[in-house]
Length: 213
Image (cartoon, rainbow, N blue to C red; front, side):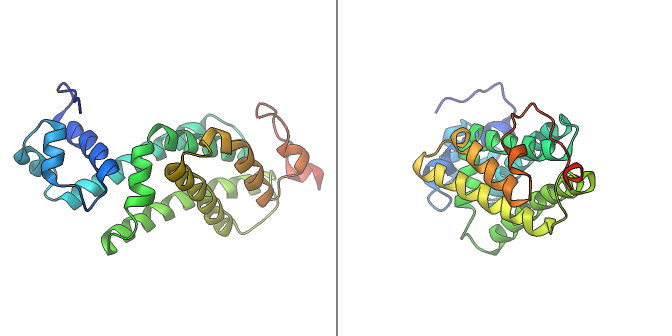
């Protein structure tokens, strides 16, 4: 693997680890593999990451930070509740596409690796469910959708997105951009968005739920 030695050493190690973990899986990966792929030294790796587990967790944190930043930027670009929800959905799928290796690490390899990894996965799951809930609450407050149990809805959305992405990681189908229209329709229906509003183009401002009721 070619590495860019102009990158900071820590980033080179993380980039190499992402490739090696994605290819070999957590258990089969050795620190020596990451040293070779990063063109660094074992001392350099251990100076930043005292164990393979901590390096793996740092990779998960890297993906989550990038995903959350992308979601926030997409949400802040839209003025209204429903539009913000849709923007976040698109940004999420785009991030999983852009960082497929990190998505594989987070959604597949981090499961079944013991309590530390499970607690990490659940913390991340809850973190993004709270983000979805916040914006669903905002959509309810604006009258864009009817009142509902937004906590339940947020976890339903998380589960649906995960299943689509995991199937794509395993099989390559359907591509997230191909799945987006159907996923968007199903999720918006699940929170009570009127059918005629679901079918509107993305650049059309959605009329609020309160104006129809």
